Amino acid sequence: MFGPVSISNDHFNPPPKELPVEFVFDFHLKYNQKYPVVVFPVNDNEASLGSYTYQEFVPAIHRFGWRISSAINLQLSAEKSSASPVVAILLRAVVYRYDAAVFKTEFLLDAMTSLIVIAGVMRAGIIPFPISPLIAQLLKNTRPKGVIFDERTRVLAEGALEEFTKSEKETPVMFEVPPLSSLFPGHNVYDALPTFKRLPESVSVICHSSSSSSLYPKVVHWSSSLLTHHGGHQAFPVRNLSGQVLGAFGLEVFHSMGMVVFFVTLRQGLILGIMNPTERSSILPADPNKIFRSFELTKPHLFLTNPRALEVWNLYDILTSIMNPCIESFLKIFGGRFLSKSVGDKYVMEGVKLRAGYVASLDPFLRFGQDRNRPDSSVTPRESTPIACILIAKSFPDFQGLDWEYWTVYPRPDVKFIPRDDGLFELIVTAPDKTTPLPLTNTTLSGEPACNSGDILMAHPTKPHTYKMFGRSSDQIMLATGEVVSQAYFGIQSRSDEFLEETELSKHPLVSSVVMFGHTRPTVGLIIEPSVSGRELATTKELFVDHLWSDVSWRRIQLFHLKRPIINTFNQSSPSHMKISRKMVVMANPEKPISMSPKGLPRRPVVWHDYDDEISALYKREIRSML
Image (cartoon, rainbow, N blue to C red; front, side, top):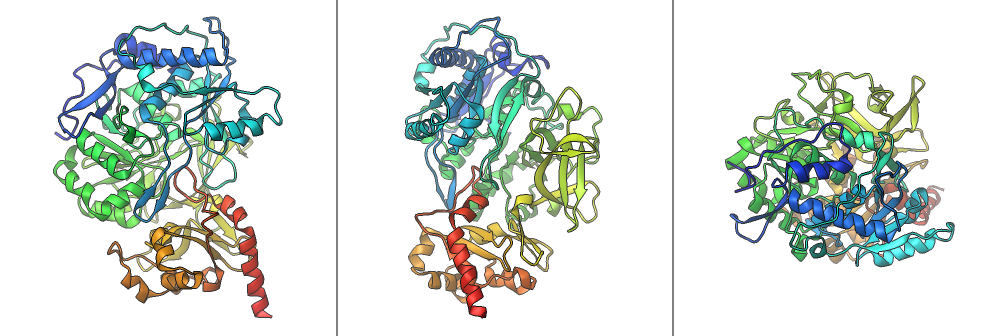
């Protein structure tokens, strides 16, 4: 069977459904002592797996809870009210960057320490707020009592606090995260943190959006009620998650997606597969080769990774080579951004079944993608488990074939798909009931507070209630002529009726990243950041553009032996207002790299702001040439 060599023979006792997540840890210590929380490869031996059980994990949580409470002078008491201080957690410096098949990363903390930090803060009755490098604005919004940092983020944290204190009287306490060895001293003796009152409406966690398409992230409050029911219903109704290992070797717990997965493990007995936390190489984000090796050694039942990694692995068929003997019992999850259509189709044609799911991070109750052939009336909106994912399994229901990008949702009173004039849809969500308000509202629907996810969806041409992601509303560029262009997708339909993505150009071996511009302008243009190979081959903008426009030069540099669309391909089938002119290309300055979101996607508003002078100069030059 495809799965870890040895996990645990202990039965998982699920916690009571109404038990707040802050106290689920103590429940597991009492009723699931020997049950593993995480497993990891100890060395390069397939038969050797290490683990941390709840008997070891929970004492470490209490140890960290005492330390952070003492640092911010919080008086812990069983009579503690629901009002809780906020502690910001800054344990990552930079997000993913991609250069063709090479992953450029900066160091973060290992997954195990990250789990302990978040859980320890929560168990002490403090509100954790994992934050991104855009922290000055976020600190002003939450006014934390402390900031947790590590050696790699000290300078960043100090700079942000200096900016923060210019407008605030009270300075947050700086607290450096202790080494993992001090949280696991080799014994399980510990002083228990006192319990406290946690009202359903109390805030338990603060997170923020990825700011993929905005200048600043949105702060989102997750209530105790939300987390209490978070993970209470299985996201995969045809599988029992107890005893299953989820290979989350590259999972960054400080993203909302990472916290979602963590809370599901606590409720359902899912075991996290991570890299060895005692090794330096386990620092995240990790090299994709190390992630893949951990996958090989651990042999998880489920696998979560970034789609970009899947595309890189697909170039060398290394993933399919070990999947084929075990597809029947193999399930893979991945989320965070689009998976290339060509890669997904290749997996499907090789016999792998892909199943798409959807979640809006600003509404963690929202989760679509169930079997459309068997509506489950027992699954209420309140019970839905928010996992954004695409699933792969041999015997999984609701298989859409080559329509694997699509997901199905039954009509629900709290979810509305609002048609647009261009034939696409916007998703509007209202509260599932009076007792469970939405974490974030930004519009109204029929007089009720609602949340517009900002996502633009495309309906399947023949299957009812079935949609796929098209892009973000903020990705839409309205030209001065009134015509609308999507920058997430160029909006060009090829003969196979597939949409050619903006990201396809970024996969060109000479290109690192691409951003389209043109809002309120007469035509569109591109900001293109060359890859290392691109800068070496094309030392000037003119030479670089020649390579991108020339089919001949492309055939000469087929570094990965793949057919990829280039700009001529886009222009041949696009309407006149969407054609890309050679004159409307900005070559990114190495001193102003394209800003990327935590998902590895360009933060377009930031890039537009950074390159406003260059963009304006192009249009002025174009206007002068027409006079």
